[in-house]
Length: 197
Image (tube, rainbow, N blue to C red; front, side):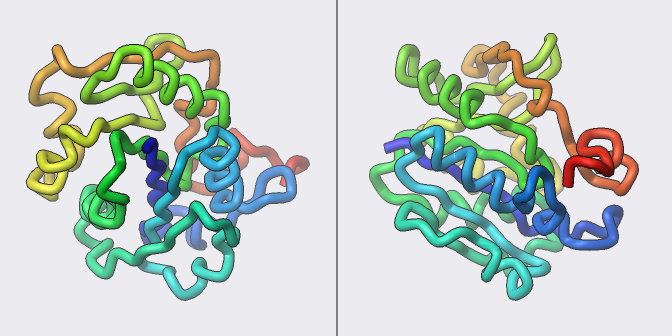
């Protein structure tokens, strides 16, 4: 079983409104993120909400593969939300592909490519990259779930990624959305543009 985890628990302070509710091509970022995972064919998708959970819960698409969980400690940072997501995975989960709601341009094809790469050569950690730069999503095999759950909150998942470079593989893909991190109104204007909402 291949799982997806979509992290949407942040406070969106720099944006000034929940990033998950920003729009692109007629969909919210939250809807786009869920659609990319489901189109790619993940067996389950855990959506982690946090600071704005009550505002966002009704915006999560209804689908039998989607499960919503809430990180009540989202102020501890992104890793705390990933921990909640991992804790909600099915016991049959072989790997989890993790994406962030503020990376809404990641395509279903990119997620499918990570799944295919894992199926061909199971590797503990796969990281999508574009033109030599690492971004999101990231695939973690079930073998590192325990390490992620035990990692220091102040270091994040990077502590696990950096622990042993030999178990990390970059997957070069032709998807600039891998690097499109939308945190501020300026980022939104740069990547989305006024005419494409």
